[in-house]
Length: 371
Image 1: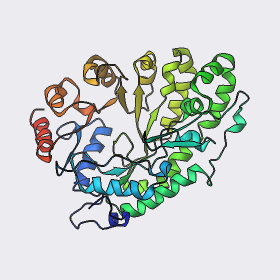
Image 2 (image 1 turned 180 degrees about the vertical axis):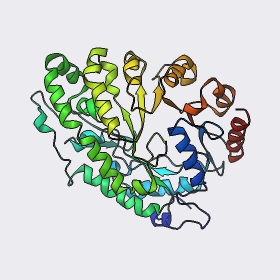
Image 3 (image 1 turned 120 degrees about the horizontal axis):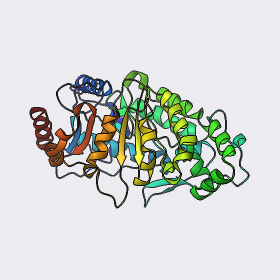
């Protein structure tokens, strides 16, 4: 397929393809993920590994189709990449319908701005100093950004025709949504000057989280096909990625008061989840985060200028000791081979890439035979 092909071509799948699209053994992959969520092991840790099918063809960059308005081009790029990518181990083809990282704040009334040059979108602060909990809707509007993303998901589901999955939204909710609506500096001042108001606003935002998850799941037929997210863990049960990036800016006391209860609530709305733990400064809250029983998996992101995750072995072991799985996204295939045995394979999921399908298959076989 060429980049100029019509997105309707996504509907024509070769007969040998499985229900999820691409050349994957979907039933086998489900078995491995079931074991992972249950802290069991089939024969090795989870490994999602992709490679180009033709080393002369480079994948086309991802395009925010909904935010940019270029729906057709976004799906054409994905169709091209899908047909030219090898999916090895537990890798699954999926498409992320998204308005960008600030989309939840847009559902609350913000305006999305998109930069084609930067390839991303954002929402500028839109709540003034007099904002109140009444500005948070109790039900998300179906005639704005929220309906726009749901409509695109429904269209993409029809085009997928069972050959690839649709991702759950990247949901920056809780204090992250307030941070976008107010601006990070203003929210810090709000927490110092009027923490009760912040609490009331947060109390109005939290019930919107399951509204988003359930509506997106229905639009993408996820109860039938399964769930996946931008952290590509597959689940047959309700799944999403949790996070609170704003936590890096507040004290442990404020985190215990606002962040921990919010994450506990959001986790209770899901069957499976991964927590996106971003930044060395957020480690002040590590014990409180690990104490949330409903959090299943941690993605540790050290942050710009910090050593990569492989250099944080003591921290990774502490996370596993707390009963949490790990999603490790930045180890090379050679690093996986050399050091995977330092961690508990039952709590371990790698995502990586190789130059060729042969290299991907060799990585999988190496880990299996060196358990």
